[in-house]
Image 1 (cartoon, rainbow, N blue to C red):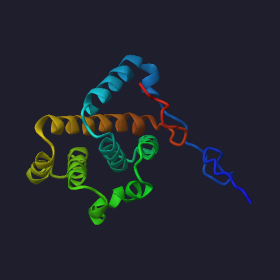
Image 2 (cartoon, rainbow, N blue to C red):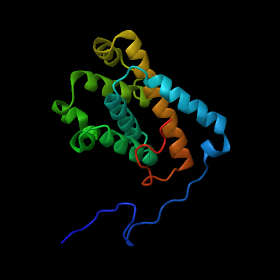
Image 3 (cartoon, rainbow, N blue to C red):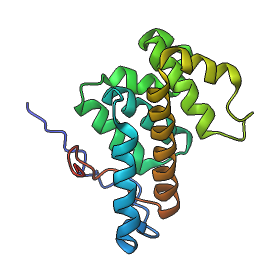
Image 4 (tube, rainbow, N blue to C red):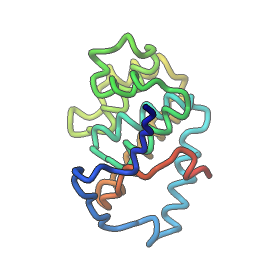
Length: 171
C-alpha cells in the first residue's frame, strides 16, 4: 500500500484558511525590496543554519505562522534536523541538542524579541559576546532585528502559512 503525503491538499475537516488582511509587499514594493536587501546584508558572514534557528525561534515568540512555515521548511532544506526544530520552543530543556554558540544566540534572540521582559540583560549579551566576535555579533543582532520586522508584517497582514516551498524567494 503506497500513500503520498501532500500536505497542501488539506483534508476536508481542517479549519478554513484565514483570509490575508493586507500585503505590504505588494502595496509597497520599494519597502519589500529594501527589506530583502536588509535581510541579505544582516545575514552576511553568519552560519545559515544558525540564522534559520534564530528566525524560527523569533517567529515562535511572535506567533508569526507564515514565517514559521517558511523558516522551518528552509531550515529542513538547509540540512537542519526535524528534532532540533521541534525542540526549539523548549531549548532550555533540551540544551544538549544545540552548541553553546547556538544557545547564546537563542538567548539573545529571545531577549531582543521580547524587549518588555527586562530588555536585553547584561548576562545574555555577555554570553553572546563570548561566542561571537564583534562584527559577527552585530550581524546576529541585525538578523534578529530583521526577522522581528518580517514577523510584524506577517502577523499584522495575517499572511497565510502552508504554501511556501524552499527556494520560492531566492534573491
